[in-house]
Amino acid sequence: MSLATLTSLHRGLHEWANRDGNQKFLRDDQETQLRRVLRDPTRRTQANVAAWMLGSWHLGNGMLRVLNGDSEGFDEARKGQALRRTSLLARKNHQTGPRRGKHARLPFSLLQGAWTSLLGLALHDPGAEPLYEFMMSLPDIAFSEKDSVAFFTRELLALRAGRRPNMSSRLGPFEEVMLHWKGDERLLGRAMADLLDWHLKEARGAGKNYDDPACRIYPVEIIAIQNVREWTELPSPRVDHPLMHSNLATMKPSLSWPQHELAAALERKTRSR
Image 1 (spheres, helix red, strand yellow):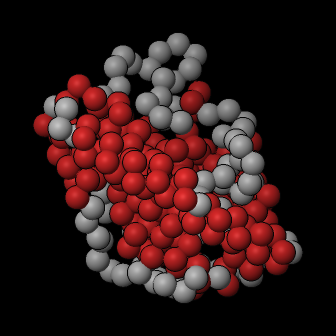
Image 2 (spheres, helix red, strand yellow):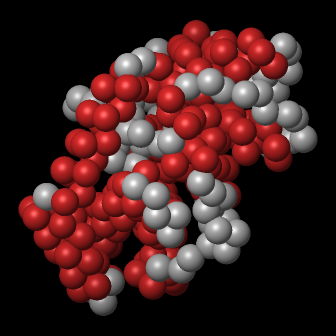
């Protein structure tokens, strides 16, 4: 994958984060909205949407800061992760009606669940366990052949929990990683590098698997894989890819998880209902 692609994605993230309209709508307006609706229990849906959008802002801007050499950007990204994770868990906790019929009724999109779970694994989110449990509980019928990121996320969480993964064509480009999970480390490293080539192809365009400001240049699936392998006491192979040489992969977040007052307030509201 050419360095021109990475440069273009970096420039696009910079323009996204510095666009006046985005700063006003995604950051300022959503923070104001979230503070307002948290005082009104009848506006739960608006609170969840505002938390997701504000979290997206902080995740994307935080990743840009890290990319530019500011390691404290990870703290901003983690605050964004807390907002988005709390938003999804609030939706899950207040979903009405059971899953039924041929399709699983979900409180949020599979990609939202996958992004937030992978970011949780990559950033060591201490509050994400309920989300992991929900993702692991999803039945096979919840996934189509196009849902490879979400299906892989479920199987990665299963490996973390000590379970055997479900090998399926729905893994798509992740299948080679699962095939070599306990095999030749060189082949696993090559499969992980191939995943990052696919990641870059999926980083731009509506409906693409990594068209999320937090995930476009952050090798979230590889960092998540490495952390799960460390969790399960397996070595991590070397992954030779330009995305693994950027500050997002070489710099590490602090050991302590930062607090975000609005995420904490939304979580308290959700528990109290």
